[in-house]
Image (cartoon, rainbow, N blue to C red; front, top):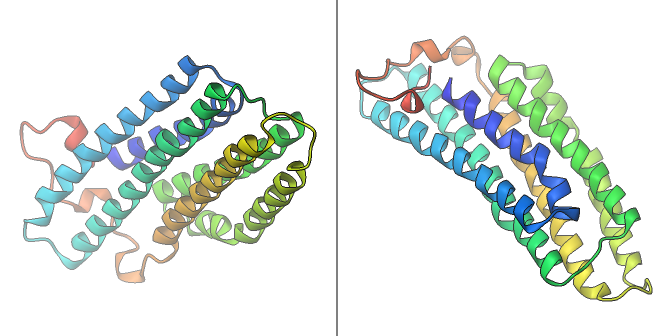
Length: 224
């Protein structure tokens, strides 16, 4: 289904984001930025299709499912935009300023990214398989993500006194990366809530319960 394709495209961006931003070239950053084009294309097609469905005579369960799909699609699109703007911009500032992020800071950022990537993967899988337990694990990871984020902030503050050139500029870039990763987790958590908060009357509603796409609609504009 198209929602799964949007999730997969956003997940690829999350997986591939950290190395280009920390150490990559302009070409690698541009390749990361272009990955958002696929997310945007799939999102636009799905929104168009769901918009058409919203004008039809839907059952209560179908209306609920449509709203849920739209919310999840928007969160995935937000992930792509966040990486395209904040993370790619931070990487380009690093290149323009000829900054080198320290090994200890790179390790810290990669550790945070690893857990955020897990959260996005788990939320995407939970949405696809209606796995409330998996979604709840993502929600319950908030204290861990908060702890890792706070540890990162403390680490960066301590690094302000390090005898390295352009230390303040590096601090700003590194702080932007930490906050962006934290926001990616927030989006994964919101997707997980869509799964966990699914109420009993709609719990067995599937993509097949929505009206089919009209003849002539492209695959990109179909939910299933």
